[in-house]
Image (tube, rainbow, N blue to C red):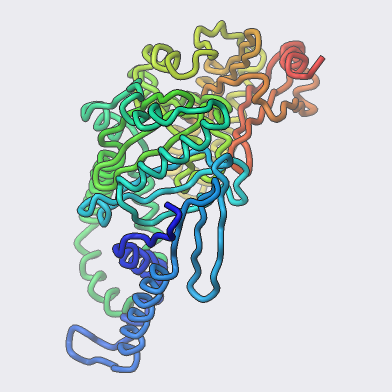
Length: 482
């Protein structure tokens, strides 16, 4: 691999589609101001600008592909790229934590993958240190084996044969079937994300739509009655819910977790296959999530909190290693991956006098809103009391769920906002621990504990509120050295 190599030509098309997506909004603006295209009333100047812009994006994608090369030389992965100015990026093998593979709809017909190079101490935690947009799967595996072989030479003289067998030696520790994936989709909050996305889209294009004509047409519809409006809203919600289920199935199909020596490998995806590799020594802690639907059914999800170093997008610094699993099975699966963690926790609870504070904390804003709603929207605003009571009940639930435990070098904290979260942390992985106490808490000898784990550029925050001050100081005393 000493000779410079180019990416597969499909990379030019991928660059074009990516740039087109980024420029979609201005292109739509030009399209809508271009008269009535459907009736044949076309203004040619805006249309020519539109076509010229598309050609410019296409040419830029081709030039990017032609100017991008990569090679392996002197223990480094060397990448050279740049549309106008030539840039060079040399990544030493010893800094490379993993190579993550993904296959999109443009990759799979040609047996290609996108390779993201994850490193320790990346300058940008939201981007990979290097990215090969489209190369042959066989070349990607050869590159991974070569990097692994060169890194292992520093530890042991010769492990070349083991590197060749790396793909077959990994051990499967967890796999989701389609039934679990569908259940996960049904019990998730994905519909809200879809509705938000639709709302953002309409907010962007609203200014370029012919609102006057649309308003006149809709006015006649509104007169039909509130029933149609309610029915339409229900249909939108159902469609959004169905879309969220389909997106979840596409995203998590074939979800499998492997253990390969010192690495955790996660593969998933239907239309777009992805493989992510997480070095075990980068794992900072665990988080178990149980939402209001899954908790009564006995299901949870487990997220690995990773120090990262360039894991791309979608909050991958905190990776869901077990997206949907029976809670009673969590310990058995994780013990194969993280043998030093324990999950039989003896919970210590906040005192009873903290109960009212949990209830107030979760519901005060709802009770404040009830007053103006009841006055200005009477009698329907009175139903806001039901919402305030629901938030009060959520506060009571948060009090019942809160807890902490210390066992040797491990701290476990559990709390709830809406979702119940349990953080499992090792002492040597905690970045910071602190106490907070308001004037009102001080009067009744209560304190809150806050713990931070390294995760990307920021940190993952764990907390347990309104503990006995002697308990909170015990946690801080355990954390402080000496």
